[in-house]
Image 1: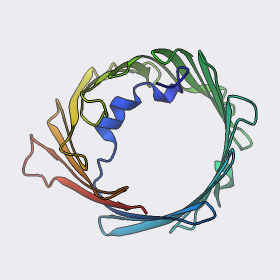
Image 2 (image 1 turned 180 degrees about the vertical axis):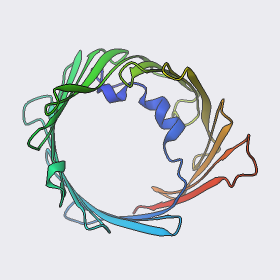
Image 3 (image 1 turned 30 degrees about the horizontal axis):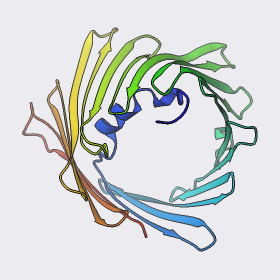
Image 4 (image 1 turned 90 degrees about the horizontal axis):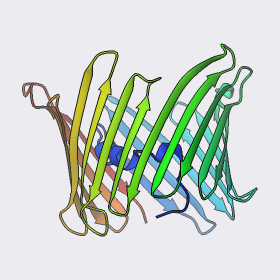
Length: 276
């Protein structure tokens, strides 16, 4: 387990990833290559309905500097510069999307054995400021985050969370949406490689008195294949099969449908990621 309590965004992340990550309803193909100079290139094409989009991303790492550039078919260019340990135990991330010059963002992260602090500021005339603080240890973490809009002088968000981690399990409770929702999750790994796991998540929205309970899990069929399932109390069932066709290259097939309305067409997605 890593040192320190981690980022606030890490609270409940393992359970969320198991229930949502890699579930897709589109057709996606990505191909990655690596040059001798250390540049990684990734070309991605996504087909959603009758519309196809794509992008080309380049990543270059030199010592403590990481540069990411992505160009998409909409003529947008996203650049991200990440600097690690300019000051010990810190990470600085600057991003900008062209031609939308108001999308610039500067984020600073500070990591300590018992605390993590992050600050993000939008680079525009009336910037929005996000701040998060996490206290604790790798086993226990308590944190909060808030967003402040300088133009209106109002809080745009505030969230609090707590998590308890063990080598084979993690439990988390998050109070979000300005206190309107509370989410509790628990994930338990059933093997040493953490490829087989069970997860449960319950969300309560106070404004509508609505409860959503989701259970799911992953099962390692063999060393190359993982099967994932999830089901919530509204009858939404999702299934995912991921297979390593060649080393580092993954084929993912997923589907989601409403068990209470079987006459509706289920959502289906397939993704192929090829890496050298």
